Length: 352
Image (tube, rainbow, N blue to C red):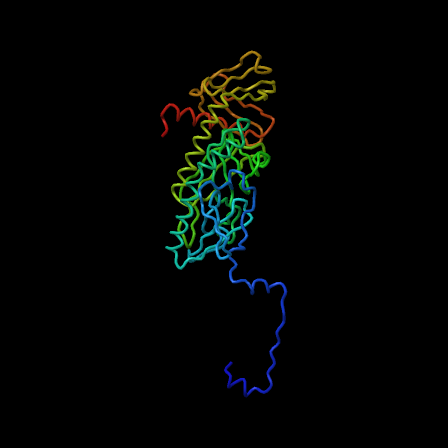
């Protein structure tokens, strides 16, 4: 309203009220210096900074170490224009969303942040393994991914997850662990020996960014099959996770070597031993009992299960199909069997 209009309106009053909760922000020239971020133990491998990054005392500047941060797009905020880049802290408590002038600028910023974070991963892996010591399984690969948690009106919803491939397991964390105690208690621990990579490539469509790059795993568990879908930011990450999981599963098979299961065959107590080199052995009573059947892997014609307790093995022998009652869900054994076979085929050079 103009000054002339105000003069014709008659008496005008202006009420001013003091707001205690917002006054500190009005008085501040800049909020950048007070931007909250990760305040975890700076001596842990994920947060120690040996890169020589400069320090700044100005309230107009905030230095954010990129070590174990997560740079992603279309994560917590829907971005149909493709202009947002999200940077999350290692502890998962804080995030910074950058809005760029256009999608190409957002892509450039996302790639620059992601490349620097990725370059620090070998250092984090080495320092973490040193901190954990020889008492724990060797860590083979780690990094941030987005796990699909649900669908919302046909659009996938994603959750930031720290994924780790160790010597024997595929570990999933909500945040970067800081201590041995936190490393010992992941949110999910999936045995590699019973895990398969079932998809790696373009996945769910996004209106703003085209097809997401995803990989999916299936794990045989006592409760059945655990299936998970993960999203990565670029083709290099997809290749790295594909290689880490496949090689991790095969290495776990070679490390495990043999698994023995107590079960029943035609109402009689038996044991089934699956050996990485020699194949299948069924013994009466237990592993030390008399051998009923022994077959190498190449004799296996068919394997199946009923999803409840029976494992079916057909070696083409005169005894016919063996219906083994495992007294529990057969999926872990079925997946283990497939991992053994895949590792053996790869070792023989029959599969690239």
